[in-house]
Amino acid sequence: MARTRRPLIAGNWKMNGLRADALALAGELASGMKQAGWNDRELLICPPATLLAAVAEAVKGSGVFVGGQDCHAKASGAHTGDLSAEMLRDAGASHVIVGHSERRTDHRETDAVVRAKAEAAWRAGILPVVCIGETLAEREAGRTLGVLEAQLSGSVPAGATAAKLVVAYEPVWAIGTGKTPTTAEVAAAHAHIRKVLGSLMADAGAVRLLYGGSVKGSNAVELLAAGDVDGALVGGASLKADEFLAIAKAA
Ligand code: PGA
Image (tube, rainbow, N blue to C red; front, side, top):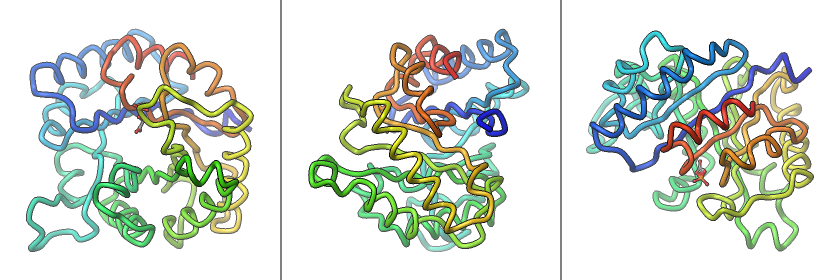
């Protein structure tokens, strides 16, 4: 069953990277991917939008996908500073992260906003990676599964299919902290996510569910082995080629 879901290792560079370093990193990842000859897993990197086109060019032909970190819901218009999914695609993106907890917190994005952004990705012909996850307070209050259910119901658009959706489970308290849930906790969350998706779409069994939050080379094997985990969304460790490739190898 797991083999029908091709693992996806996604790197979210966040607001990091100036041209020279970013292109060097992209080049290392492209040659690492080529050398490994992986055709049973996918690698995705999401650089800052300023570097999207240059990074897309740098990894061309390597099989490494390039994505945006966010998009606006509209295709164009008077939205100063924003970027549409169409623009990301035009710059070389095949994917876009939507609803990352930093967007939900820093920009007060609601589930409805995230859903509109996922729909925008479909409209533009790129694949949304919809992020959900509970805060520490929510986990400590025993509300994790309920929070995930509410976020999924609110953020996943009607008409979703496994080919058009990737979901990333990222406990907010695990992002950038070095803390991770136990594999049992990850497996429980992912099983619940797949169950909830089952009520929202026909082929939930085939949707790829990524785990994100302090994934690194040294814990990737363990985290990726948890039930219903089909890859990782990696922040800090995606900024180092050897770490990111070690995580990809673990998949
Ligand atoms: P981290 O970030 O790997 O640095 O914890 C993960 C993310 O925010 O996607």
